Image 1 (cartoon, rainbow, N blue to C red):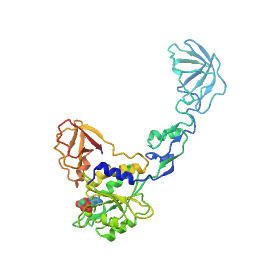
Image 2: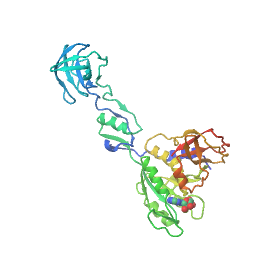
Image 3: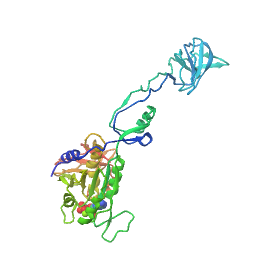
Image 4: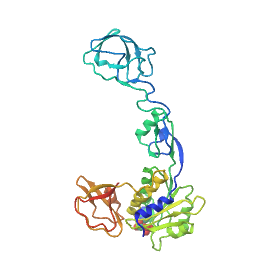
Length: 391
Ligand code: AMP
Ligand code: MG
């Protein structure tokens, strides 16, 4: 058996970035910026008014100034302002040449074409200098997951098409004679395939492009048929059939298809049977075989699959980010495998569920954290600070 970290390193060695594509800005949110981009213009492109008021060369309480025109957003006033003059101005409008400040309209009294400066005049110039936000050529570094704020910034930089990492195509294969699809009517010995749907959701949320292949039955022909449909996937994930039971055919079939197996067993709970390698064929597609137990599959999704997807998206090879919190209850000592316990993070701290069987999706549904116990972790007291993965 190898450790989680060793397994992850082997997976990172197998994962290949998917490359770059350009998408319209409107579709770029949540994607990974693949190359640095540079602002195509300066913002603001001219000194502009931060307020509604009057642009002036100078003003002191009691001054009376002549209003010589108006500068509105999108319509500048084209002449310079001279001492004793004021230009009516609105937020976002270009400040006329010569003006050094904008007196807000609340601080003046307008009488026909003159204004009288009031005595509560503050000292702010209310001018946004040209380039105060960013200058042409200012760079956004890559790789970077594009947030809504980034999209607004890219728009104002006049970047209409964005170079992003191509979404990794992931083919998901459920295996098992007992499985039917949600919505179908299961036979008396059958259950509903759930893992593929959970993993599909997990993969989509991380920016991958997952696809469900037909359920493979527990025979070589059916499993080979499923593998034959993998098509142009960047990653193939099988679920179930990965341990050493008589009906666990994924490893033998994948090997028959030329898979060079990178490893098979990982010292973790849940999720011990896990394999990875490359399939034969020109593209030598990466494959990960996940355990079938629903919670194991989802935990391996968080611990292994998502970090791999991130590498395929051009992000650095790092384990799932962990946070730390105190325990709200005592915990007994851990065995030899790294344990990912379903838990809830409450105001008092982390509480692990009593029932941790790897088949219990209802418990996973209630959990908002996976409390991580290192191998041979001793018993833990209340308020001990431990690692967890947020769910
Ligand atoms: P296996 O690894 O094939 O021995 O499966 C272990 C357990 O997980 C068995 O109880 C299977 O019925 C269950 N299982 C396997 N694949 C799935 C799936 N896609 N959805 C739900 N349960 C599954
Ligand atoms: Mg099975």
